[in-house]
Length: 478
Image (cartoon, rainbow, N blue to C red; front, side, top):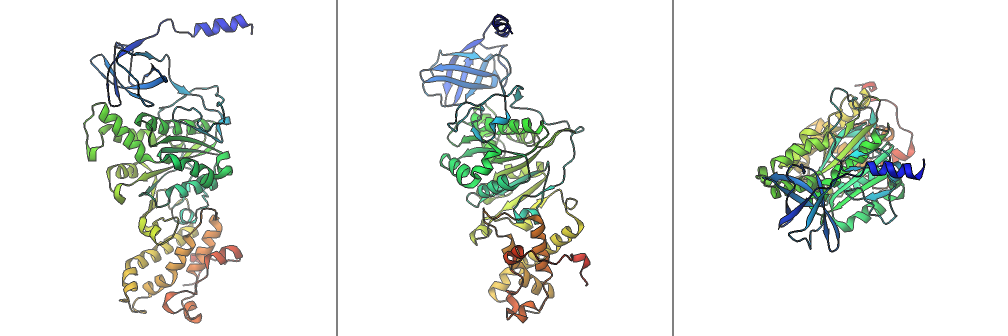
């Protein structure tokens, strides 16, 4: 095309007018702008000139011709009388496959020091609606995660949305990195929302690693950034995942954490004049949570899928606090990570008895489901009697079920223990679990193990040997 023709086409897209308002008040992070009546709308983007550069802000509320705005960065230096220019057109992202291996902020700008990001051809709305319920595909087959506790007891399926509920410092970030590296998917999109700044590089370099990063896009908004940027980063994470989903790919979307997204929305709501409701959370928090989480899941028929794993930071280890309770009702399953299990050194510290996958039992083969139920029954029995056994109040032989649980439950716990570099295979894990459940009742006595059950098969040894029985519970004689 001739250069003049290109110039004419570009000039046609230049707006003939540009709206701007005047900053009339700055209170904390809330900026009030007058003069945009009839032009500004909720979600519109404004830009203001500061001595240090441009300050971007978003309209979050309108009141009698005054636009209430919140900034994407520190408004230090902003003065009344500053012009606030209204951005023309729809603000959108332009994701591209070349973003794999890169780190971006909530606005899609590179933060890894590796230069500019190539921009894709098609715009992607940052805040998009989920696919229509009537046209969405169903949740697909089980995905192998490489985490034995999940593959055995809380399976993850293609297009499922799973929550990781945990307090601080019990290993949820390490578990996320294991899922990012090992889960059977094409692309991983990882949102680090409200993370500590020093932990971002540790997560990317030590936990995720070069291989994990190569198939991932990492969206970062650290805890020191404004609430608007933290909320925006969560939306951007889903928008990038939707870009790859629409290309027919299997996308794994990991977000740490939904709680910090909710806290950011609470700050925005309170600054915009919303009344506090449950434990200080504003009504908009509980409206935004399903809008965010429903964007993950299967796409329309013929598209790919977004398998979502979202962490929930439970306040004071209270798993019934408002955000945890709301998220649990939206997602397709929840994994509970408890401090009690972490304190005794079993990682991942997943509480099997409190964790649920809503794709069960259909995602397991009948024989695998029988093994899972039998193992859960043993762990439940052991959990009920554990304190009495520790105190010496239980007499061996009083109950056959309890004796079996005392003998086998510790070995199941050993099977579930897994380092962050030790990938597990689903078939090998089920075979090892079957071998544990099939151990004869007198195995411990023959080996001199007594009631402690030390002679049950060693799972690590069994997994490496690869010579396990093919018999299932249903085929074993009574």
